[in-house]
Length: 168
Image 1: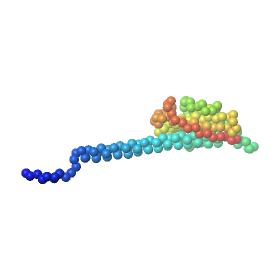
Image 2: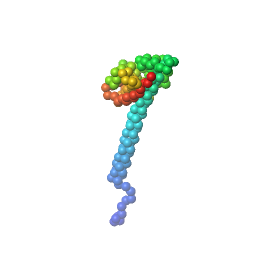
Image 3: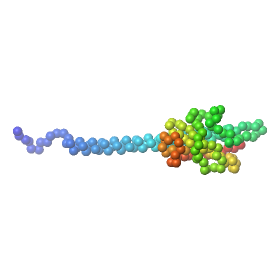
Image 4: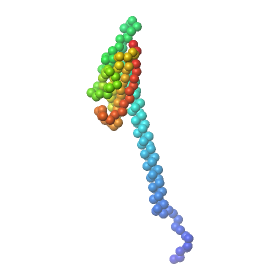
């Protein structure tokens, strides 16, 4: 059997294959991590947008609970607003209910605490008003847990304040 000098077997060595697999693995891990971070940030933004919309719906509906007396004046009492009332006509999900948490501390008058579950996230809403100003300042503080799956308000939460004014 005679060997030729300078003749090499054609193909890849085990080291070349291993290095190629390592490079491909690093690229795949980086791409998957980036996609996960993008999806998580999109979910967080969606939760914040939903919380803001809940606050806007409640404030706009709260402002419309007054009644016109026929002489050019509105009678309006913020404490009459109860979104859990079955006769309350609002397009909120059926999971809207009263609860016993406290998110106050941003105004002198507190109407009540409510919670609402949308898309698997429980939002905790406190409605506040300041009747000492003209026009009256209405605020909805909408909070949600950092752990989006928790159905009770933990000490570690995010919130948005949505403010509007009642002119009457």
